[in-house]
Image: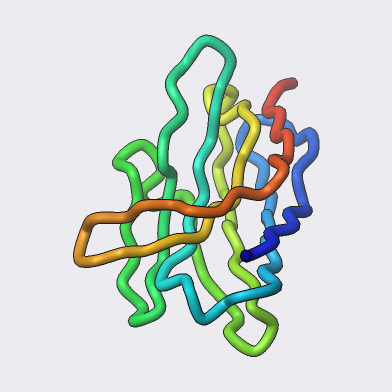
Length: 120
């Protein structure tokens, strides 16, 4: 089992920035990638970004150039730096961990979610 604990959500004005953190604990050896999903009201949950153990990174088109996913291996922590935030980024953001091969990613574990609200 892998436990994921997120932090860093909150409220920010349009154009602002937030950084989300996700600390993993437990059977870390069983995962090969971590990612961030978001679920906005009335919309389908989507994968924003994911990073694999080998370092490969993918982003959904809507966040490219504004969101950056990174990791601190020594801390088993993954971050999502979100810049130039727009109101449509308002959502619950979920950290995930699972398996990745090439561009394929299948999450097996989920965090509790953290709310991000972008509004003036």
